[in-house]
Length: 102
Image 1 (cartoon, rainbow, N blue to C red):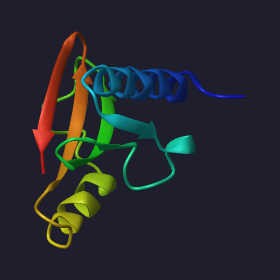
Image 2 (image 1 turned 120 degrees about the horizontal axis):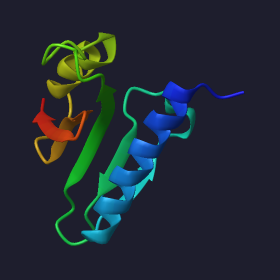
Image 3 (image 1 turned 180 degrees about the vertical axis):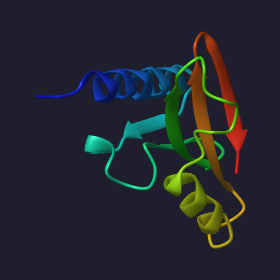
């Protein structure tokens, strides 16, 4: 049985994939979100690549408190991937959405 937090997170990931695809990206969610990134996307015209971590945070949490072990691993990854690869976190806190570049 899937927990409600997992279902909300999965729904948020699918929403981001839908948005990327509507903007012309080839985007895919990582199954089960057991990898370092939740979504990867490639733009077929520019060749740009995005690696995205998705987070939903409670309204009462302090900004930035969602930066967990995956965030730290993504920061380390930034030093070894080509410049055309964008690594970011798409964070939803209440009704506010923010995109952070790593």
